[in-house]
Structure formats: structure tokens, C-alpha cells
Length: 382
Image (cartoon, rainbow, N blue to C red; front, side):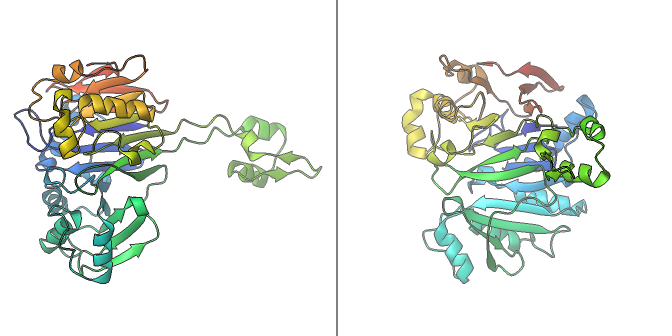
């Protein structure tokens, strides 16, 4: 199946007449991961579902299939739509559990574990502050129709806690949990560089095992138990001493795929550069190159900076989003994309656009035009 990435907001902090704030949904074989949930997200998610029903029958985006909500950081243009959306899902009698994960600082983790008040220097938009408020407003065990897990972490220390939405107590976890029932895809955090604790998020799909060689098993007259062992990856020794390697009974495995969504970050965040090269990178591009000083001041990226980051990561497919309100037209974005001799392919996204990653690793851009999507291969300078 691969991935179907729905980008439902391409504005930065200030929405415009034709751009909403951040929020994306990544559909994978195991379910849907929502990355960021700015104001009005549920309306945009609902509109995208409607467009799929009308213009691409058979393709769905069901709220009940959302297994995890991943926050890149706590700024309100990335979080302020989450509570209303969860309450709406509860009104719709959602039953499936929802995992919610986001970044914070080590000092906040310590305070929560000790049952203390948050440190005085905790940022006003820290996710711990917001979640405590949301829990008091009904996003808790008794207020919602579905179970939730609230996990905060400091990826730099690989430290994670789970916050009880009813009691406010925190418990330390051995590792970051994965969405319930997901077995072929994993989510992973990569520290980025912003004015508050921030992560990029990757969704990774492990390649399927190669096809089992039933013909060879039949030719060797293997019994059912021997076939089962080889199919499960266990080597088998025959009565004559011949060792049959389980790997030799499998064809070529499927291609592993991954998508990374950066959230807000300065150019070339060291933590992001440590990530394995993804099949697709969706990266913020808040400012024009002439505004590099503003990008440095606010720890954002320019369009050219996003391209440089992608090139340092060895990425071949880059999608740009999160534009300042000063950027009026996408042609302005394309005009600042310079890839040189690298094989990097770049597109500038609009609200409602999709990025499809197929099982072979090919990436297609589906550009939304109000009456469905135009299929476009990933080519430089849309």
C-alpha cells in the first residue's frame, strides 16, 4: 500500500484566505497518523474526507482509523484544533484507543514525575501545560468515549512518561509506545531545532518478507512442520544432515519506506540529520532567502534552507509547506528552489494536496484544485 500523505494546512502561524494552519494525516497499512492539529483541523479533515468520497471513490480517511496523534511542538497553530476534534470523535461514539505523543523538556518530565508544579521557566505553550488544561476540560477517561494515552518525551535523553488524564499523575516508560495494533509501521521522533521543544516525526513501513518458495519445498518433499518452520524464519536440518536456510526459501523482500514531517525547525537541525534517509521529506519553508535573518531569529527555515537540509540528508523527494503570509503565490516558492546537479525533486504544496508513496518507493504529487486532484510526478519547481 505505501503511504498517502494528506497535507491539510500549509500556512505558518497566521492563516490566509487560501491557507490554513498546520495539520497533516499520513495513511499507512496499519492506520492513520495525524501530525499536528492546528485550529479548525476537524473541519479540514472532514472536507478532505468529503472530497475523497466525491472524487476518488474507494479511498477513505476515517477518523476511527486514526491510531496516533503526533505533535511536533506546542505552538498553538499546531495544537489548538486537537481538543475540539477529540470531543467530536467522542460525540460520534468512537471506541478505538488513541495514542497522543509530543515533546517537552527534561525539567518538565522531572516535575511531573515528582508531582510538583511545572518549573517557572516552562514555556507558556509547553504541551504539558496544554494537556493539563485539556484534561480539566473533558479530555480524560470519563469525558471521552474512547481510551487515550498521553505520552510526553525528551528524545535527546530517550526519556518518556505517560500522563494520567484523570489524576494528573505521571509514570515513566521504558520506551516510546507505538499505536495499538500497528505491526508493519512504526512512528519515531527526531529532535529538531526550534524555540520550544520540537520533533520531526517519521512513519516507517518495514518491507514485506519475500514470497515463500512453495515449489522448492514441494520438490524437497518437506513435511508440514518443516515448511512451517522455514516460513517462520527458522532453519531446518534434514535427516541426512542437510541444513536448509530459511532465508534461501524467501524471495526478495519488499522495499522499506519512510516519510518524515519536520514541523517547525531551523535549517539542518542536527537531530533531523541523524535520521535515516526517508523516501519523502515534508519540510517547513517559512521564509524567503531574503528573510534569512528572520529565519535565524525565530528558528525557522527558508525555502533554500529546506532544500539544503534535504540535500544533506540525501533525500530525493522533498515537499515544501508552512509558508509565511508574505509568500502569496507558489510560483514564488518555486523560484527559490535551486537543486543544482543533485537528483532532488521538489514540490511546493497547497492545502488539500496529497503525496502518494507506492510500495516500490515512487512518489507522486496529487495537487488539489477544488474538484479533485491532478496527478503529477514529483518534478522540480512545481
